[in-house]
Image (tube, rainbow, N blue to C red):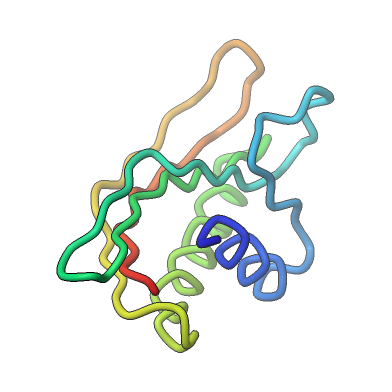
Length: 112
């Protein structure tokens, strides 16, 4: 499953932060949230779109970790299961309900 491949890969690349599929109930001070938002197939190659959100209590660390996530995602092409990766949109925002800074990047992943 591509979801598991991405989570395991990011866990090894970013060993000092939680990589999760769902919003944690206890809302830790920092984490990366992975959500598959679309999927399909093109010429027998699977295509999946993911939203990856980096959430931190301070903007500086959120921005720094977001760059680390982006670097790791561009390097995911080195895995045998991945045939292509493309970054889509990216934006930052402040979640005023819990005072967390968030960067969200959309990724198109082509895989086997």
